[in-house]
Image (cartoon, rainbow, N blue to C red; front, side, top):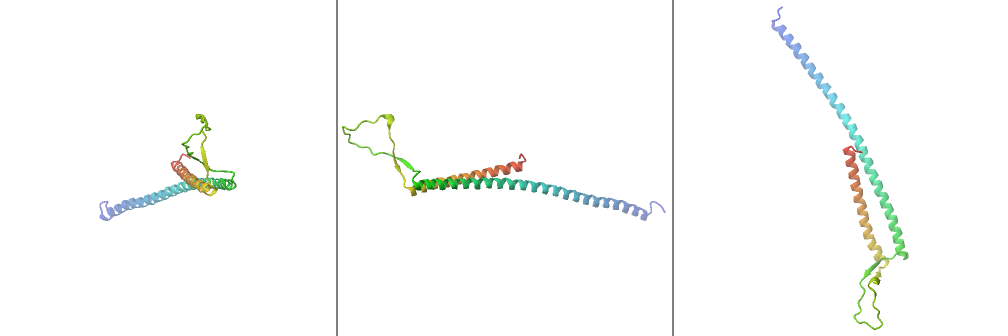
Length: 160
């Protein structure tokens, strides 16, 4: 049996091709396993970040709810004060100018000017204050949104 026998050459060729083929398949299996481990590690890291984001958002939500509750209590107290008359809303008005001067009129000193005011009725005062309360609520909500965005950004950036 000679080394140049076609069957021997074919056997050697098949052994070499088989070993490379087996190595290729084992290598691809090892690469698949490595990629799965890497994906699992990245998924675990993503879950940790998600939990940090959820915590940050819940914290901001809790702060907003507490601020809104405190504001609601202050509004109720203020409305009760307006209803009882303990708190009155006054607006400056322009005093009518009397064109006729009498001899009994005394000139008012320039530093002693008295501002004429008018008092609003309770319903008008509460309606006017309700508009400002809504503006305050919108501002609190916007600030909470900004704080939540900043917390999420810092969490994703990795500085917190």
